[in-house]
Each structure stands twice: as C-alpha cells, then as structure tokens.
Image (cartoon, rainbow, N blue to C red; front, side, top):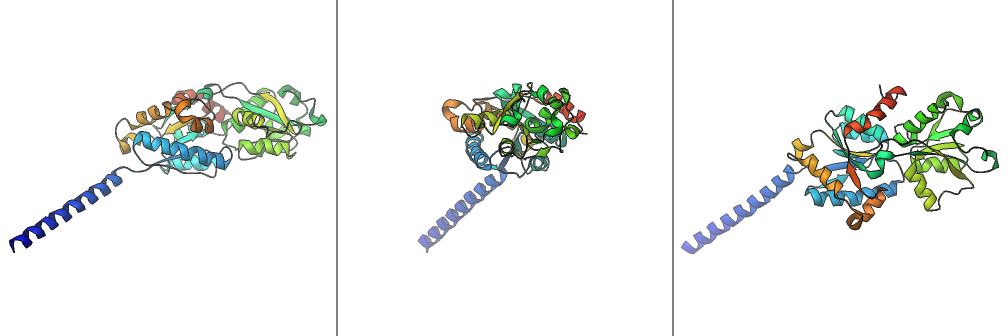
Length: 302
C-alpha cells in the first residue's frame, strides 16, 4: 500500500509538472504576439513575396518574436492595414509613409535604403521614329496634346507624386494638357510595359525598377526608352507603429531599427538585392516634410 501510495503521488506530481510546463509555454506564446510586416505592392508580386519571406525569417531570428508577412492588393490597403494595427511595421514609399503616420500619431520612420535620400523617378517614352525628337521634358512642352501618359499607383511617390510635380515645374498640366486623362498602371513594372506595348506614349516610374529592367534586358529600347530623370527627393522607408514598445517592451522599436541597420551584403545579400540596396541607413519623420508639402500642394493630402 505504501509503495502504491508513493507511486500515485509521484505520478500526480509529474502530471502537475507537465501541465504547468505546457501552461507556461502557452502563456509565453500568448505574451509574444506576432509582428506583422507589410509593404506597398509596387512591383512584381513574386519578387515581393520572395523578398518578404526572407526578410520575415531574418527579423524573427533577430528579434526573437514571430514575424509574418501580410501582402496587400494596393498602396492604400497597406496604409489602412497599418492604421488599423493589422500591420505593425511597413515598407512605405515616402507618400504612403506620410499618410500612414498621419493616421497613427507617434509612428516613426526608422530606416531607409541608402539611395532613398537621393531618389529619382524616370520618365520613359515609346521607341520608334515617331518619338525620336522627344529627349527630355522640355521636348514634351507643346506636344502633349498628341500624347498619352501613365503613372503607377495614384499613391506612389516615385510613380506619380514627384514625377507629376516636376512635370508641373516644366510647365505641363498633367490633368489637362495630354490627349487623355493620365492612366494609372498600379505598379512600376506595369508602367514601362504598357509604354512598350504602345498603350501609352509616356510613363513615369521608380529609377531602380527601370534600371533593373534595362540591366536584365527586359526593356527593349526599340519599344521603350528613357526620356528624362527627375531631381532627387527622399523616398522609401520602414515605418513602425507608435505602440510597438507598449506591445513588445521598452526599446523594441530601437531594436527593430538596429536589426535593419545590421543587414549587410556579406551575410544578407539576397534580401538586400530584393530591396534593391546594399544597406539601410537611419532616417526620421522630418526627412519627409517636403513630400507632405508637395502632396498638399497637389491636393493628394488635405
């Protein structure tokens, strides 16, 4: 009887210990919510999926929290997801970053790619003899009535906002001077492809997307070629929600920033290549004040 009693007691203690361990593990999981990351769908969906798959894996290991990529169907959808806390960390263009931070006061732009401090848009034009005399924006003045133009997304900094602004500086009223109202392709890749296909005569897109299309031999110069380049401006950035430290602990936003700054070509070459950069550098909200001013001037932000 004594042996049976001891065995029963040992079994009970063991079961309690196991249950307590399982409960503790479950609680630990509940105490560490998944960090959801997103980004504007500015180019080929397969490239973006690969980019964020590798990125999420890296960030999860660095932060010791589960990280999940949340794809979005449009630029505005990413801004909405960020404002509603469906995404806590997002790779925005300058304009969508401004819009997102306006809807989540206290949100911080924490890093940008090295070349985002001096980013440019490219204007492209159809190839062929019919357009041979168009070699810069000045050549468009007075001829736009015979031409059509497409941008990327309406919310795109490099595919709409800034190239539209600089067209205005050149004396071109985008809304009224072209043969038809401007088109919106939805992404940078589609912009040059539509011009190459003859659907539009002129297009505007991000410089890195255009340069990759040229380098990889995808853009046939007999069908689409570069027309001009905009002056530089600040563009893409990673923005963190205002409540990250409240949810994940003091200093978590700074920890995210440190993890992004630690990405380097030797150890993380693929993910950096997918972001079209060799490194991220620190940034802050003040760098995008000029973008907000331009957006207000054009009536995109009110």
